[in-house]
Length: 515
Image 1 (cartoon, rainbow, N blue to C red):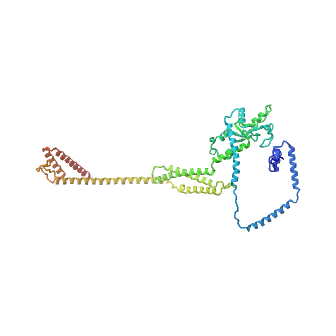
Image 2 (image 1 turned 90 degrees about the horizontal axis):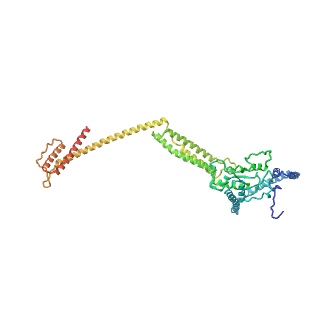
Image 3 (image 1 turned 120 degrees about the horizontal axis):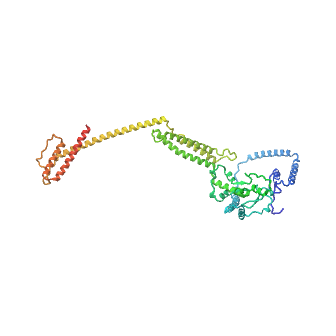
């Protein structure tokens, strides 16, 4: 063996050097993949048969195992007794390997990311100006990704099967490796464009409720799946043309051929993108429940307003509309309760990884908050009145409105009467003051200041109405002033006479209305 060559151990296949872990798997591998040479399979079975007989020749092995088992149990019991007497010890020196693990992990991730980015760049170049003609497309693909010479490859690197007329050689369009048809994966051109251009990626979770794994795996099609078998006709047609029709689905659909390794890298990249974009199921449930809670709050405020209005007997809202709104609020309450229950039991049936710690506490708190909301806002809402109660409320409101209108009308009449009495009193006071002033201070002007009535003016008897008496006196004064050609005094006296006549007319009209 050369010094630089690595030593392999295990149940290895002598042809493809694959470790099959167990003798049974190795035998099965030879029967399925290397059945072309029956002598090798026969030699392998004889070798396993001899080894089995040699192992079974050892007698007394069971007694040795029983003795060993008994001694081990006695030793464990003695060690348990010894260890129980120990006092609790303090931790000694500790060492953190986080940095070392991070460095190893970063190197591996960088290698995977570099390989994945290389595949994406090649995929972008392949999609750029991709010819539709098969021959031109083949030349275009080989110009971007060099293909491995298929003459130097005798077996498929994935399944270790030999190539022949019925098992043709194919090349991966991203790395150029050789593979058989059964180990080929097909990537549709539409999915390839979505991988290259992230702006074209749509949210599949809103379209299909399937899981992320199923959505991503659905983008890659394994060769032979869903393709109907073609029976060979008895004509002298070319066998290779028939095989190419069966093995090449790209004739009917536009695909890229990929090997298993390139497909795994692309699928892992898509899974990481889906994890970043997709939300946990608990977040989706909680957002849906919050939308129901917000809608229930709006409807609850409107329902309370309608219920209060109906109980007052108002006709602003309709009783049937309020009943419909109450039914809608009840359905929202059922949805909130159902979603909160689902959140509380989310993942409990998972025996391997049940919710615990902060996750379990969060689910319980969401359930408790939803229950509190239902009790305080939705379940304690006021009931709506029946048809009979609503009719009674309207009749009561109508009577109350009529009583209030009658009371307001009566108050207005009383206020009007009081106002009239005040006006009458004011008029009487004004007239009495005017008469008193006229009697005490009659118009006697000094000759030095201007014209004045003569003392020979006749004064009527005091048994007359004082207002009529005053008007007669004013008429006599007006006649004297006109005779003396004092027209300014005539205008003033006539104005006073008109005011006195208006007051006398208003007083007589008020007395007649009161009577």
